[in-house]
Structures are given as C-alpha cells and as structure tokens.
Image (tube, rainbow, N blue to C red):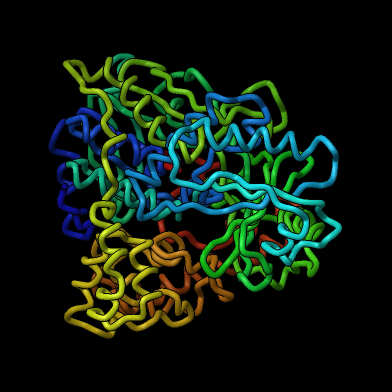
Length: 579
C-alpha cells in the first residue's frame, strides 16, 4: 500500500524544480483521465514520469462526461462486440478492485414501445450485455410489465411504454475519479503538475527530446528533458502533433455533448432511464439528490477550453425527456448545465455521431506518442497502449502494464470502513449520511479530512449555499488535491457549480475566504477570484440563451479566465492542454 501524497503548495514548488533538473523516461501532456492513466501506468512500470496539465486536472472532457462506466448498449447494436466486451471488463475491474469507493452500480429502465419484436430483441441484447464482459458486480437485467415499470418510474406517462427491462451499469464522479488517478500516480512517484502548459517541443532533428513548459500561475518557464512525450490532450491532439513539426498519423474532431442537471424531486423515479432518440440515446442518470439528463452530439469548431451550451441544445434535451414525462421539465427546473467535447477520430462521415469512439495510438515521429479517441470507461486500456507504444523510445527492458492490479488511492480498506460507518459517525460527531457522503468521495482517504477537522471542528459545518458539502472538503481541495483557483473547488473538487440553484455563486465567497490563507491570497485576490467565478457563471447563463454555437461561444468567452491562457482557437501554436 502506497502512502498518499499531499498535492499542496510545497509539493508544487518541489515538482516545478524537479521538472527542470532531471531527465524523465516519460512526459505526459494532458491531465484528463487518459493522461492521468498514462502517468499511473508508466510510474507503476518503474519509469520516471512527469504529467503536466495547462488548466486543472480533469478540467475538460473528463469532468463533463455522462459520468458512467458502461459498455454502451448502442455499440452492441452496432455489432461492436470487442469494444463492449473491453468496456464491460473495465467496468468490472473498477467496481471490484480498482475503485470500489468511487464507482458503484446504477439501474436503468429501458422502456418498450409496444412493437412485437422489441422485447425479444432488447432481451437478447441485454442478455449478451450481462455476460460478455464477465464479472458479477452488478445484477442481471430483469423483465418488467407496464405496471412494474410505472411502479419504478411513476413519472412516466402510461402511454409512453408498454413494458420495460431493468438493467445495470456503473457510475462515478468523473472529475474525482480522474483526480484520484493523478494522486495515485503521484503516490507511485510520478511528478504531477496542473497550471503548467507546454509552449514548445524540443527536437534533436526529427526526434522529440523534451518540452518547454510555462507555469501559468507565475509565467516562469523551464525545459523538461524526456525520452518520450505522450500526447494525451484530447481535442488538442492535432495542435501538439503540429508543434512537433509533423502532420500526425490521425486527426481528431470535437463533438459537443451537453447535459442538464435537475433536482431529484422533478422526476419521480427509483431508477435511471435510457431513451432512444433519432440519432442515439438519452440518459436520465441518478446523481445523488439530482438527475443528470443528456446528451447531445454535435460538431464543435470554436473555443475548446470553454465549450458553450446553447438554448437549442437545452431545448433538444428537454424535448426528448418531456415526450415521456407526465409533468414536463421546464428551463426553470434546471440547476446546472455543462458542455464537454468528445475527441473523436476523424473519418469520412460528416456526422459526429458516426465517427469512431474507438481509440488510436500512434508514434508519429521518434519521441512522440499520441493517444486519442476512446471512451472514459476504457481509459486504463488506452493508457497501457500508449506506454506500450512508448517502449521503443524509452529503451531497455520496460515492464508490462500492472494497473489492472493497482487500486486507486482510497480503495484500500474502503469496504471495512463502510462496515464501521456507525462507529465512524459517532466518533466524528457527524450524521451517518454525512460520513457516507465522505466515504463515497474519498474512500479510506477520509482519515485525512478527519485529521484536518480534529483541530478545528468548525470545518464540519456545511458550506453556505451548498449544504450537502462540508467546509473541510473545500479546505482539503487545496491542502491535498492541487486546487489552485476557486473554480477548481466549486466545479471539480466538489460539483457545487451544477448542483445548486446559484451555480455556486452563493458559496463562492465563503470558500474563497476559507482557502485563501492556505493559498496565500490577500483580500484583493479573494475579491478577484469571487468576481471571476461569478462572471463565469453569468457568461454561461447568457450563452445558454443563444440559439447558435457562435453566439453562445462569444458570450462564454466574455468572462475573464482565472488562468491566463490564450483562447484555443486563436493561438493553437501556444497550446498544450488536457481533457
């Protein structure tokens, strides 16, 4: 069992010094789940590893997904059995071994419409879905009559279904899972830094031998020496390939996916829903005291750091879900909206829903390996493939991947803590539901939060405006979890930005004043962080009133960026970001 690493200010200073003073076997660019997985894979093979992310860990696609570990029923329908099998195997590993504290089963109702062939057709698919990946961490599907389906989901109109099937997948807080993967990589010796962007790649002839990186917080630059660069930058993949002076072996297109978040009482159901649409599927996903509803699938060619949802996106989602609800959702019911960009391998099709969800790895030139495409669920496989491809540049006897057997930080001892939850709650003076909330976010790392609150019991007070969270969680974000800005805390270390009616604005000042002393903020800096966050929320709300992407993009970019980074569409040569 490894010792968890505190990703605090001291760690950041030491890591910055290390970047410029030693040679690394592997430099990973991009702090999304694929980059985090690659850093963990490399570090656990015994390779000296560095990971840099220009914004916050999981600040792009990896905090804006459907938050599912799933095989993908529609891929099964497309006869892509290998992809489904691989994804379901990874789902089982997450549930049983790698991240049982972060990933848990979630039920879905598949409503039937009444066509004679539909029930045997869907039953055959779900029977295969239950068995193709192996493992038994989720229940098998079961048949439901119309009465049985409506008992589970009274919110549905009785004329919207003739029966149904209940099946299971798994879900996780994607941003927290990605961050935990980063922390696990650090525990195994990787040097991990957010707010560090690559401004150039260093070459010896055609070989990439390093990178020039800039600390976004200070403007300081240093050169990193490495045997191989792993480009895990998602929708920025082509930019890094161009920075290396080559054309690359594949290209990536961005597909925008929008989700809306509504309070749990707006949809009366004990289970999630999966609904067929003309292009794909729409999920209604249980999310604590909320529902996540989505997603869309449209081409996006504007700012990649801050994709914007439009009124048309939101209307599309509401239109499809309201077609089956007794009591329709309205825009006023929405507490959160988020838009993410899927990095799809570019093909001949003009329709992004038809582009490949499979991943590709290419050694486009000596010293540079690019990895793109794929699904969040299969990040570990993608990461292993990327490090396998890097062997040629690292040289020597590089071990095989072992991440199949590496639990993420917080997994060790989690099940025992669940069994002791009543005792833990009494000892901490907290309700059982509070301790459950903490265990399901931190696992056995919860003891680090308990230690913070031991000397200051006020940290067990709820956060103003977001009472489901405790003050200690916000403080822990900066003392242990590498959060550098208010947005990092409200949007990714917690999910306050999509779970509260104010989108986190009512919590912003209290959080800024709590973490400011740890981050060295004076009163002026506290004010600027609060103002920047409020401006971001206002810009997003305004963008969601626009009908077209270009107008929504312009509204979103009107807000100041807490991290001083050029807009991605204007200066791609200066960019290196993660997903």
